[in-house]
Image (tube, rainbow, N blue to C red; front, top):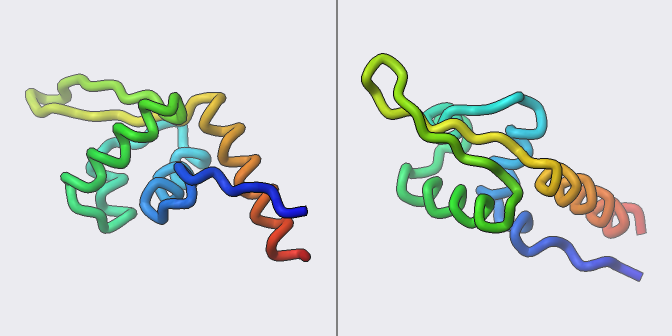
Length: 94
């Protein structure tokens, strides 16, 4: 029996963001924007959806008088990603 895939992670951009955050301690907004090739507006919306689901934490600060947005994956987000990958493998290996 196939398990449902997390609709929040089934979005290409949100999945890309979570995949990046799994492998780094934290990532700046500009780095995520460069890596995903997303527009600033679209990335902001998708980050907010991940934050609302408690999949990521967003920290806003200043670095050299410039605003800086740092994103980190949470334990909830990591578990959701691991479950997503496990469930997706069921589809692939069936």
